[in-house]
Amino acid sequence: MQETAISALIDVPSDMNITDFLEQQRTEDPENVLFTRRDDAGAWVDVSAAAFHADVTVLAKGLIQRGVALGDRVGIMSATRYEWSLLDFALWYAGAVSVPVYETSSASQIAWIAEDSGLSLVFAETSEHRSTILEGLKEAGLQQRPEVLLIESSALEQLREAGAGVSDQDLEIRRATAVGEDLATIIYTSGATGRPKGCELTHGNFVDHSRQTVAAMEGVVGRHSSTVLFLPMAHVFARFISVLFIAAGGRVAHTPDIKQLIEDLGVIRPTFLLGVPRVFEKIYNAAALKAEGDGKKRIFTAAADAAVDWSRATAEGRVPLSLRVKHAVFSKLVYSKLRHRMGGNVTHAFSGGSPLGERLGHFFNGVGIQIIEGYGLTETTAPVTGNIPSVYRIGTVGIPLPGNAVRVQADGELLVKGSIVFRGYRNRPELHAESFTADGWFYTGDLGRLDEAGRLIITGRKKEILVTAGGKNVAPAQLEDAIRADLLVSQAVVVGDGKPFISAMITLDGDVMPAWLRSQGLDPDTEMKDLTEHPQVLAHLQQVIDATNASVSKAESIRSFTVLEDDFTIDSGHLTPSLKIRRAEVMRDFQRVVENLYEKAAHRAKRH
Image (tube, rainbow, N blue to C red):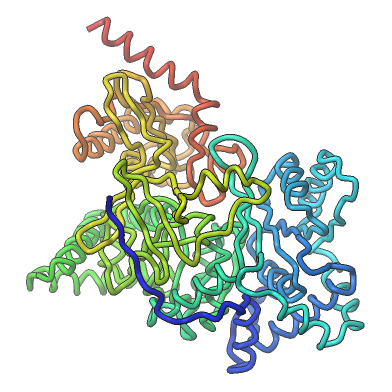
């Protein structure tokens, strides 16, 4: 068994709640800009701490006036936008509990969330969201159905007007009531089977996590920092960053459409990004394709290799003069242009959700953007470990953040403990009991190990380990991450449980394919169904598979693969909102595809 713990860097009062961060900001520096948001005309405008506080409090008064009571659960179903943070804080000021609902949620999922959490009110962004919510509420058959207010209407303005009858003193009583152990939000996360589980996160979880992270990340997150949030605000990762930046006094902008991201980065010019590996893969692939389209493929490839070599050499403390010169040249010719496309000021990024490929991490580090990988769950208020600059090593997810500990059991399962671990699953005492040890450690279900410095390396998901017919245990994540890093690949799912060997299902990146086809002298308008069996596409993917197999044993290597016509998406139910594969759903819906893979392989074996 391995274990490591990091002591808290600062003492956090147990009676603090999340709203104290905003109170502190508007008192210490009321003109400090906390948000940059789009106005009704689409122009970006700054929102100071004083202005945000004023809007939050007037909305909170309106919520109180319309009957929202202490501890009431209120749902928010919306894309990532400024109003998400505004409502979140207004609900906390009113003493309520916010319950995020993914905008991709089905009526049945909403029905369960409404019933399990006991929603008293729901905010919906659009009329389509409202219709889905109403369908879900009807399906739930609740005796008292919560009212649904539309964000994209006059509902917020009506709340502002309604709050005139609530005094500042009454609001302050509500705001100050919650202490660290009180419930702040219920975030529903789906398990391998059954209905979504409601994770109860407290004010103390967010407060302690934010205070300790700011202290541990000095120079990375602070008053000078700015970011563009584009991950779903219903996800714990984005929620934590939203609270963290209020605590640090940094500036946040929101963009609901990742296709708008590059343009928004150019306007906001953030210092810091939050993403998942797929986002950074797409940034790299877009740069590689642009270079190829401009006839500069060889230059970009050489620059990418130099960035990786420089990063690795720097980590070892030995950078040859020739490499320093090469890196400096490419910094002007190539890296500066990539940094400019990301706004020009980005120095750091958080990445989570799944492992970031080691080469990709070294590439961005060599370019001048340090990607800090972390590991965490909804149950741990997002990252419980972080690859912070003081212990930075690419290929790990770092050490426990202050006030927390990790333990690796003999079978490799990772357990965590500390101030950021949730208080339990809503209405599921039996699940809570089986999720914790007698002395308070939480079973994560993930597998890992600690290096010599106590940094965590994630090796797989316990329930996702494949056992071949020959008895070989195979962690699919390592293989999938290596395949997905290729510019043509969107997603990869490795299969082989109970089978004679390992195989893979691969989907193609529709955004990349036209440019790649053009570079190969092929028709850029070739339909996806024809690309799944195109000889040049298959040859390219076989090279990717061969390179992936070079990093594992023969028993773990991928012997066959198939290319699917349709991508895995959030809407199809095969990806989570943070773009992780829903393996159970994929295996259920593509069972026949998997069977065909092995039937064809058996047929080929008989012929030979």
